[in-house]
Image (cartoon, rainbow, N blue to C red; front, side, top):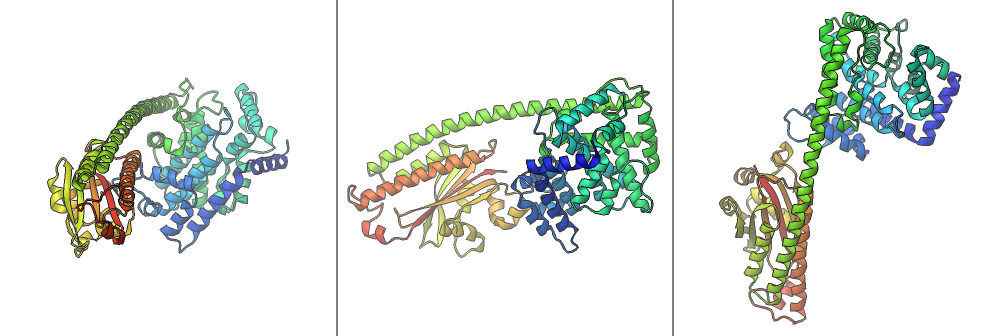
Length: 549
C-alpha cells in the first residue's frame, strides 16, 4: 500500500466514525485559547466547561492526590486552572480528549496499550526535559503524548491491518520499521506528523515527531526536545518488549544515550521511569484506562538491569491493581448497605406520614403535628439533630422552637436570629426567596468566604442543604435545621429522600388547607382563621441538612 493511499484511507475512516472532527475541534479550541497572550483562567475554564464529559473527568483528576495537595476540594474548573497551572490543565485536557476520542471500540485492537504508552511517554519526557534544562517542559509533554499518534490512529482506524502487522512482528523476520514501510508505505511517526500538522499544531511540535537525527537548522532546545521524546519512546518499547530484543543490549545502549542527553546517571533515569509508572498507576482510573496495560512482561531479556526494572514495575502495578479491586468490593458492599438503609428510611417516612395524616384529620394541635414532623425527619434519615425555627415579630426574627436529636444547645443558642443582623441575612434570604442552597463541603475556601463566620464557628457544619417549599396554610414562616450523624456522609440519595419526605409533608398541609377552605374540617383558632388564611402571604419552610466536623 502506498503512503498517500494509507493516509486517505485513515482520513476517510475517521470521518466516517466521527472521531477526528471531535478531537481536532476541541483540542484546537483549547490550544487557540491557551496560546493567546491575554488569555486568563476563566477563558480556558469556559472552553473546557462546554464539554461536560471533559469537565467531569478533569475535576476528578484535579482532586486526586497528585494534583491537589491539601487545597480543599476543587469544584470549579477556573479554580483548578489557578491551583494546578494553566499549561498543566491544557495538557490534561488534551490527554483526556485523546483517550476519549481514540478509546478502544473494538476488542483486542491494542489501542488501550498504545494510549497508556502515550501518557507514560509524555509524563516521563516532561520530567527528563526539566532535568535537561528545556525551557518549555509542558510542550515536551505534548510532544511525548503525540509521538505515537500514528500508531494509535492505525490501530483505531485500521484494526485488521494493525493486527496483521503485529503478527508479522512476532515472527521477527522483518524489523518493525520495515513492516511499517511495507504495509503502510511509511512509518508511524510520519503518519502522526502529517496528522498533527493538518490539525494546526506548532512547527516545534510537528518537527519533534521523528526518529534519528533532527532536521538541520533547528535550535539546540528543539534538538534536545526531539531526542528526549523519541528516546523515552524507544526505552518504553524495550521495557514493554514490543520491539525485538535479540541480545538484550539495546536497552543499555538507549539508557546510556538518554543519560548523556539529560546529564543524569542511568540509575536516576530508571528511578524517573519507575516514578512515572507509579504516578500514572495511582490515578489511571481517572483517565478511563486499566492497570493491565501498565504491566510489562516479566521474562528473561538478557539484560539484568532491564529485567530488574520490569519486575519492580510489574510488582507495583499488580499491588495497586489488587488494592483497586479490594476498594471496589468495599464500595459495592457500602452501596448495598446504603440501599438497604434507604429502604428502611422510606418505610419509616411512610409510617410518620400516616401518623401526621391521622393527627391532621383528627384536628390535633399544630404543635403536636410539627413535633411529629421533626421527630420523623430525625428518625427516618441519617440525621443527628433537628430544630424547628419559627419566624416571629412580623418576620424580623427566626427562633428555634422545636428540637430533636443530640447536641441541641449549639442550635438553640445560634438560631436566635435577627433580620437586621448582617450575619443572619443568608437564612432570611433563603426563606424569603424560596431558593435552594447545597453546600457540599463548608470547609472549602469558597464556602468559608460565603457563609457567616459566627455560623461556622458555632455550628461547625460540613455537608449542608437548605431546601425551601411554600404553602398557604399558615401566615407565618419557619425553617427546619437538620444535622447529619458524624459517621454517615450525606449522599445525594439522602438529600433526595429527605426532600421527597418534606414535600410529602407539604402536600399534607395543603390538603388540610383545602378542607378548611370548604369547611369540611372546622378550623381551630390555633391553626388559622379562614379570613386570616386567605389574605396571608405564602410561608416558607427551609430544610437545612448537614454534618458536623
